[in-house]
Image (cartoon, rainbow, N blue to C red):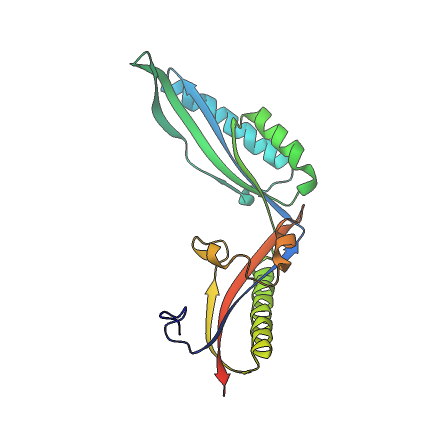
Length: 215
């Protein structure tokens, strides 16, 4: 007899199920900044303000409404550098940050080129997404429950026992730190191909189900 059991207090069958659904993106989010360093703070403010106006005009030209643009107020700070262990003043850095949503996926490249030409000196990220993510997440969760239940039924049949009532249901975020221990034990590998689908947004869900055993 084993001195230690894997489960100190066995009570039934506990299984993990995961699933993903994919969809073509219909939205792009672009995060960028207009950043300039000048010796004079007034000059830094003036230059960035001019480029902010040019950026907004470029966005309007591409059909991006003002309501789809989030921008920060102009920020100013002193900028320094170290040369031969000596602190050297570079000037005043002024910047404005932008977050933009656009449905024009076919013109993303042209939009980025025009934004850079207008003054966007730092592109922080380009992310494709879907507007129906909530509905896709609901589908993925339903599939994850089905995958977990199917696994429990398979284990019960293989062990020659009868599956009882659902006793426990726990939502698991597959992207959250700590969920790595479950990877490879999802819905039979169905999620791996989905996760690598090119040109698609993949929405995932996972769940832990616990069933009693009918004696």
